Amino acid sequence: MTGQRLPPEFQLIAEIFAPLAAGTPGAFGLTDDAAAIEVAPGRRLIVTVDAIVEGIHFLPDDPPADVARKLLRVNLSDLAAMGARPIGYVMATVLPTDLDRAWLESFASGLADDQARFGVGLYGGDTASTPGPMTLSLTAFGDAEPGRELRRSGARLGDRIWVSGTIGDGALGLKALRGDLRGVTVDGLAYLAGRYRVPTPRVALGQGLVGLASGAIDISDGLAADLGHVCETSGVRGIVEAGRVPLSEPARQALAAEPALRADILGGGDDYELLFTAPPAAAGRLAELARSLDLPLTEIGRVEAGAGVAILDESGRDITPERAGFRHF
Image (tube, rainbow, N blue to C red; front, side):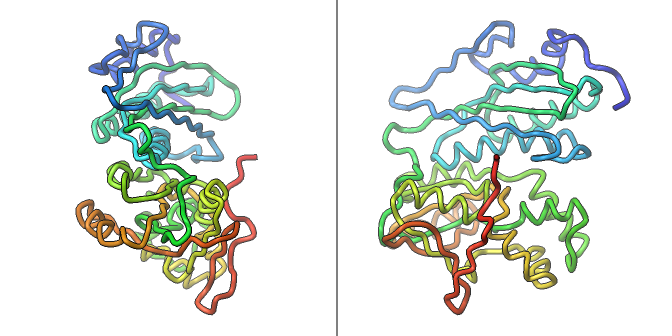
Protein backbone atom coordinates (compact mmCIF):
# COMPACT_ATOMS: atom_id res chain seq x y z
CA MET A 1 0.00 0.00 0.00
CA THR A 2 1.16 3.53 -0.72
CA GLY A 3 0.64 6.75 1.19
CA GLN A 4 1.48 8.09 4.63
CA ARG A 5 2.64 5.32 6.95
CA LEU A 6 1.00 4.68 10.30
CA PRO A 7 2.39 6.55 13.32
CA PRO A 8 3.75 4.75 16.41
CA GLU A 9 1.15 2.87 18.47
CA PHE A 10 0.33 5.47 21.13
CA GLN A 11 0.23 8.30 18.60
CA LEU A 12 -2.05 6.15 16.42
CA ILE A 13 -4.40 5.57 19.37
CA ALA A 14 -4.44 9.25 20.30
CA GLU A 15 -4.98 10.54 16.77
CA ILE A 16 -7.25 7.92 15.19
CA PHE A 17 -9.00 5.85 17.84
CA ALA A 18 -9.32 8.18 20.86
CA PRO A 19 -11.80 10.46 19.03
CA LEU A 20 -14.11 7.43 18.78
CA ALA A 21 -14.11 7.21 22.58
CA ALA A 22 -14.97 10.87 23.14
CA GLY A 23 -18.15 11.06 25.16
CA THR A 24 -18.06 7.35 26.08
CA PRO A 25 -18.47 7.22 29.90
CA GLY A 26 -15.81 5.03 31.46
CA ALA A 27 -13.50 4.99 28.41
CA PHE A 28 -11.24 7.65 30.00
CA GLY A 29 -10.12 8.87 26.59
CA LEU A 30 -8.33 5.55 26.02
CA THR A 31 -5.58 6.71 28.40
CA ASP A 32 -5.87 3.84 30.91
CA ASP A 33 -5.31 0.07 30.80
CA ALA A 34 -9.01 -0.76 31.04
CA ALA A 35 -12.46 0.80 30.89
CA ALA A 36 -15.42 0.85 33.27
CA ILE A 37 -18.88 -0.08 32.00
CA GLU A 38 -21.94 0.63 34.09
CA VAL A 39 -25.18 -1.29 33.67
CA ALA A 40 -28.47 0.10 34.90
CA PRO A 41 -30.05 -1.54 37.96
CA GLY A 42 -32.08 -4.59 37.03
CA ARG A 43 -30.13 -5.14 33.80
CA ARG A 44 -27.55 -7.81 32.91
CA LEU A 45 -24.41 -7.26 30.81
CA ILE A 46 -24.48 -9.18 27.51
CA VAL A 47 -21.11 -9.75 25.79
CA THR A 48 -20.21 -11.07 22.33
CA VAL A 49 -17.04 -11.20 20.23
CA ASP A 50 -16.39 -11.78 16.54
CA ALA A 51 -13.28 -11.56 14.38
CA ILE A 52 -13.02 -10.94 10.66
CA VAL A 53 -9.98 -11.81 8.54
CA GLU A 54 -8.94 -10.24 5.24
CA GLY A 55 -9.53 -12.61 2.35
CA ILE A 56 -12.05 -14.70 4.31
CA HIS A 57 -14.66 -12.34 5.76
CA PHE A 58 -13.88 -9.29 3.63
CA LEU A 59 -12.00 -8.72 0.39
CA PRO A 60 -8.68 -6.85 0.19
CA ASP A 61 -10.18 -4.11 -2.01
CA ASP A 62 -13.33 -3.58 0.07
CA PRO A 63 -13.73 0.06 1.13
CA PRO A 64 -12.21 0.45 4.62
CA ALA A 65 -15.31 2.25 5.96
CA ASP A 66 -17.40 -0.75 4.89
CA VAL A 67 -14.95 -3.14 6.59
CA ALA A 68 -15.38 -1.16 9.80
CA ARG A 69 -19.15 -1.20 9.56
CA LYS A 70 -19.21 -4.94 8.95
CA LEU A 71 -16.90 -5.57 11.92
CA LEU A 72 -19.19 -3.63 14.25
CA ARG A 73 -22.47 -4.79 12.76
CA VAL A 74 -21.83 -8.54 12.90
CA ASN A 75 -21.37 -8.10 16.65
CA LEU A 76 -24.44 -5.91 17.01
CA SER A 77 -26.33 -8.68 15.20
CA ASP A 78 -25.32 -11.11 17.96
CA LEU A 79 -26.65 -8.68 20.56
CA ALA A 80 -29.87 -8.37 18.56
CA ALA A 81 -30.28 -12.13 18.59
CA MET A 82 -30.24 -11.97 22.41
CA GLY A 83 -32.73 -9.11 22.53
CA ALA A 84 -30.07 -6.86 24.05
CA ARG A 85 -29.65 -3.10 23.88
CA PRO A 86 -26.17 -2.18 22.54
CA ILE A 87 -23.89 -0.13 24.80
CA GLY A 88 -20.39 -0.10 23.31
CA TYR A 89 -17.38 -2.13 22.26
CA VAL A 90 -13.66 -2.81 22.50
CA MET A 91 -11.59 -3.67 19.47
CA ALA A 92 -8.28 -5.33 18.56
CA THR A 93 -6.70 -4.48 15.21
CA VAL A 94 -3.84 -6.60 13.80
CA LEU A 95 -2.69 -4.53 10.85
CA PRO A 96 -0.33 -5.23 7.93
CA THR A 97 3.01 -3.50 8.27
CA ASP A 98 2.53 -1.71 4.91
CA LEU A 99 -0.93 -0.28 5.73
CA ASP A 100 -1.19 3.45 5.14
CA ARG A 101 -2.78 6.09 7.33
CA ALA A 102 -5.52 6.98 4.84
CA TRP A 103 -6.92 3.43 5.00
CA LEU A 104 -7.12 3.54 8.79
CA GLU A 105 -8.63 7.01 8.85
CA SER A 106 -11.39 5.85 6.49
CA PHE A 107 -11.88 2.77 8.68
CA ALA A 108 -12.31 5.00 11.73
CA SER A 109 -14.79 7.22 9.89
CA GLY A 110 -16.95 4.15 9.17
CA LEU A 111 -16.94 3.30 12.86
CA ALA A 112 -17.83 6.87 13.79
CA ASP A 113 -20.82 6.86 11.45
CA ASP A 114 -22.15 3.60 12.88
CA GLN A 115 -21.50 4.65 16.48
CA ALA A 116 -23.87 7.55 15.87
CA ARG A 117 -26.38 5.35 14.07
CA PHE A 118 -26.56 2.62 16.72
CA GLY A 119 -25.82 4.65 19.86
CA VAL A 120 -22.60 2.90 20.90
CA GLY A 121 -19.08 4.06 21.78
CA LEU A 122 -15.53 2.72 21.84
CA TYR A 123 -14.25 1.69 25.29
CA GLY A 124 -10.73 0.60 24.33
CA GLY A 125 -8.73 -2.06 22.55
CA ASP A 126 -5.33 -3.05 21.26
CA THR A 127 -3.24 -2.69 18.11
CA ALA A 128 -0.52 -4.90 16.65
CA SER A 129 1.23 -5.40 13.32
CA THR A 130 1.51 -8.49 11.16
CA PRO A 131 3.12 -9.53 7.86
CA GLY A 132 0.05 -11.67 7.19
CA PRO A 133 -3.56 -10.82 6.45
CA MET A 134 -5.32 -8.11 8.42
CA THR A 135 -7.27 -9.49 11.37
CA LEU A 136 -9.87 -7.43 13.22
CA SER A 137 -11.62 -8.50 16.41
CA LEU A 138 -14.42 -6.65 18.18
CA THR A 139 -16.13 -7.36 21.48
CA ALA A 140 -19.52 -5.71 21.88
CA PHE A 141 -21.43 -5.06 25.09
CA GLY A 142 -25.14 -4.73 25.60
CA ASP A 143 -27.64 -5.11 28.39
CA ALA A 144 -30.90 -6.96 28.90
CA GLU A 145 -33.39 -7.77 31.63
CA PRO A 146 -32.16 -10.89 33.47
CA GLY A 147 -34.07 -14.00 32.49
CA ARG A 148 -35.72 -12.34 29.48
CA GLU A 149 -32.83 -12.65 27.04
CA LEU A 150 -33.62 -14.41 23.76
CA ARG A 151 -31.92 -17.79 23.69
CA ARG A 152 -31.25 -20.49 21.09
CA SER A 153 -32.60 -23.06 23.53
CA GLY A 154 -36.15 -21.70 23.76
CA ALA A 155 -37.87 -23.29 20.72
CA ARG A 156 -40.88 -25.43 21.67
CA LEU A 157 -43.06 -28.01 19.92
CA GLY A 158 -45.72 -26.33 17.83
CA ASP A 159 -43.77 -23.07 17.46
CA ARG A 160 -43.53 -21.46 14.06
CA ILE A 161 -40.20 -20.52 12.47
CA TRP A 162 -39.76 -16.93 11.26
CA VAL A 163 -37.07 -14.86 9.57
CA SER A 164 -36.61 -11.14 9.07
CA GLY A 165 -35.82 -9.44 5.78
CA THR A 166 -34.62 -11.56 2.86
CA ILE A 167 -32.35 -14.59 2.82
CA GLY A 168 -29.38 -15.44 0.61
CA ASP A 169 -28.30 -11.91 -0.28
CA GLY A 170 -25.02 -12.15 1.64
CA ALA A 171 -23.79 -15.31 -0.05
CA LEU A 172 -24.90 -14.07 -3.46
CA GLY A 173 -23.27 -10.72 -2.77
CA LEU A 174 -19.90 -12.38 -2.37
CA LYS A 175 -20.43 -14.15 -5.69
CA ALA A 176 -21.39 -10.82 -7.26
CA LEU A 177 -18.15 -9.23 -6.06
CA ARG A 178 -16.19 -12.15 -7.54
CA GLY A 179 -18.01 -11.89 -10.86
CA ASP A 180 -19.70 -15.27 -10.47
CA LEU A 181 -23.39 -14.31 -10.92
CA ARG A 182 -25.42 -14.44 -14.13
CA GLY A 183 -28.83 -13.03 -14.99
CA VAL A 184 -28.79 -10.17 -12.48
CA THR A 185 -29.10 -6.50 -13.42
CA VAL A 186 -26.26 -4.08 -12.69
CA ASP A 187 -28.31 -2.49 -9.92
CA GLY A 188 -29.12 -5.94 -8.55
CA LEU A 189 -25.44 -6.89 -8.42
CA ALA A 190 -24.67 -3.67 -6.55
CA TYR A 191 -27.50 -4.36 -4.10
CA LEU A 192 -26.25 -7.87 -3.35
CA ALA A 193 -22.65 -6.67 -2.98
CA GLY A 194 -23.83 -4.04 -0.52
CA ARG A 195 -25.71 -6.63 1.52
CA TYR A 196 -22.51 -8.68 1.80
CA ARG A 197 -20.22 -5.77 2.60
CA VAL A 198 -22.48 -3.88 5.01
CA PRO A 199 -25.13 -6.05 6.69
CA THR A 200 -27.96 -4.53 8.72
CA PRO A 201 -28.12 -5.77 12.32
CA ARG A 202 -31.76 -6.07 13.41
CA VAL A 203 -31.20 -4.37 16.76
CA ALA A 204 -34.69 -2.89 17.17
CA LEU A 205 -36.30 -6.16 16.09
CA GLY A 206 -34.33 -8.15 18.65
CA GLN A 207 -35.52 -5.92 21.47
CA GLY A 208 -39.07 -6.03 20.12
CA LEU A 209 -39.06 -9.83 20.12
CA VAL A 210 -38.49 -10.03 23.88
CA GLY A 211 -41.63 -11.61 25.30
CA LEU A 212 -42.81 -12.71 21.83
CA ALA A 213 -40.15 -15.08 20.49
CA SER A 214 -39.32 -18.34 22.22
CA GLY A 215 -35.89 -18.79 20.62
CA ALA A 216 -33.65 -16.75 18.33
CA ILE A 217 -30.35 -16.64 16.45
CA ASP A 218 -28.83 -14.40 13.80
CA ILE A 219 -28.19 -15.93 10.39
CA SER A 220 -24.42 -15.66 10.03
CA ASP A 221 -23.42 -19.20 9.00
CA GLY A 222 -26.49 -19.91 6.85
CA LEU A 223 -30.21 -20.53 7.29
CA ALA A 224 -29.93 -24.30 7.51
CA ALA A 225 -26.94 -24.29 9.84
CA ASP A 226 -28.23 -21.62 12.20
CA LEU A 227 -31.67 -23.19 12.44
CA GLY A 228 -29.79 -26.39 13.23
CA HIS A 229 -28.12 -24.66 16.18
CA VAL A 230 -31.53 -23.64 17.53
CA CYS A 231 -32.95 -27.12 17.08
CA GLU A 232 -29.96 -28.82 18.68
CA THR A 233 -29.94 -26.65 21.79
CA SER A 234 -33.75 -26.79 22.07
CA GLY A 235 -34.02 -30.56 21.50
CA VAL A 236 -36.46 -30.24 18.57
CA ARG A 237 -36.68 -30.63 14.79
CA GLY A 238 -37.14 -27.73 12.37
CA ILE A 239 -39.14 -28.04 9.14
CA VAL A 240 -38.76 -25.24 6.56
CA GLU A 241 -40.81 -24.82 3.39
CA ALA A 242 -38.31 -23.55 0.82
CA GLY A 243 -40.98 -21.77 -1.19
CA ARG A 244 -41.76 -19.52 1.77
CA VAL A 245 -38.18 -18.36 2.34
CA PRO A 246 -38.23 -14.64 1.40
CA LEU A 247 -35.90 -13.57 -1.42
CA SER A 248 -34.93 -10.17 -2.77
CA GLU A 249 -35.61 -9.46 -6.44
CA PRO A 250 -31.89 -9.73 -7.35
CA ALA A 251 -31.74 -13.10 -5.58
CA ARG A 252 -34.76 -14.25 -7.58
CA GLN A 253 -33.04 -13.18 -10.79
CA ALA A 254 -29.90 -15.12 -9.87
CA LEU A 255 -31.89 -18.22 -8.92
CA ALA A 256 -33.88 -18.13 -12.16
CA ALA A 257 -30.63 -18.00 -14.15
CA GLU A 258 -28.92 -20.71 -12.10
CA PRO A 259 -31.25 -22.95 -10.02
CA ALA A 260 -28.27 -24.62 -8.33
CA LEU A 261 -27.78 -21.37 -6.37
CA ARG A 262 -30.59 -22.47 -4.08
CA ALA A 263 -27.99 -24.32 -1.99
CA ASP A 264 -26.02 -21.08 -1.56
CA ILE A 265 -29.17 -19.19 -0.61
CA LEU A 266 -30.18 -21.75 2.01
CA GLY A 267 -26.71 -22.47 3.34
CA GLY A 268 -24.39 -19.65 2.37
CA GLY A 269 -24.57 -17.30 5.37
CA ASP A 270 -23.61 -13.63 5.84
CA ASP A 271 -27.23 -12.45 5.92
CA TYR A 272 -27.32 -11.29 9.56
CA GLU A 273 -31.09 -11.44 9.57
CA LEU A 274 -32.80 -12.84 12.66
CA LEU A 275 -34.28 -16.33 12.67
CA PHE A 276 -36.68 -16.91 15.55
CA THR A 277 -39.38 -19.22 16.79
CA ALA A 278 -42.69 -18.15 18.28
CA PRO A 279 -46.00 -19.76 19.22
CA PRO A 280 -48.83 -19.47 16.66
CA ALA A 281 -50.69 -17.06 18.95
CA ALA A 282 -47.91 -14.50 18.52
CA ALA A 283 -48.59 -14.01 14.78
CA GLY A 284 -50.78 -10.95 15.22
CA ARG A 285 -48.32 -9.14 17.47
CA LEU A 286 -45.47 -10.05 15.12
CA ALA A 287 -47.39 -8.48 12.25
CA GLU A 288 -47.77 -5.28 14.31
CA LEU A 289 -44.05 -5.33 15.12
CA ALA A 290 -43.18 -5.76 11.44
CA ARG A 291 -45.33 -2.76 10.52
CA SER A 292 -43.87 -0.60 13.27
CA LEU A 293 -40.31 -1.37 12.13
CA ASP A 294 -41.13 -1.34 8.40
CA LEU A 295 -39.37 -4.70 8.23
CA PRO A 296 -40.85 -7.85 6.66
CA LEU A 297 -41.16 -10.84 8.99
CA THR A 298 -41.96 -14.12 7.26
CA GLU A 299 -43.15 -17.42 8.68
CA ILE A 300 -41.17 -20.15 6.88
CA GLY A 301 -41.77 -23.35 8.85
CA ARG A 302 -42.58 -25.12 12.07
CA VAL A 303 -41.04 -26.89 15.06
CA GLU A 304 -41.73 -30.59 15.51
CA ALA A 305 -40.58 -33.45 17.71
CA GLY A 306 -37.32 -35.02 16.67
CA ALA A 307 -33.88 -33.69 15.77
CA GLY A 308 -32.18 -31.84 12.95
CA VAL A 309 -33.46 -29.66 10.12
CA ALA A 310 -35.35 -30.47 6.92
CA ILE A 311 -35.90 -27.94 4.14
CA LEU A 312 -38.67 -29.15 1.84
CA ASP A 313 -39.52 -28.11 -1.71
CA GLU A 314 -43.06 -27.68 -3.05
CA SER A 315 -43.49 -31.45 -3.46
CA GLY A 316 -42.29 -32.22 0.05
CA ARG A 317 -38.85 -33.44 -1.06
CA ASP A 318 -35.98 -32.78 1.33
CA ILE A 319 -33.57 -30.32 -0.31
CA THR A 320 -31.50 -29.42 2.74
CA PRO A 321 -28.02 -28.46 1.44
CA GLU A 322 -25.29 -31.01 2.08
CA ARG A 323 -23.10 -28.12 3.10
CA ALA A 324 -25.52 -26.58 5.58
CA GLY A 325 -23.49 -23.46 6.32
CA PHE A 326 -20.13 -21.76 6.73
CA ARG A 327 -17.56 -23.78 8.65
CA HIS A 328 -14.93 -21.92 10.64
CA PHE A 329 -12.57 -24.91 10.74
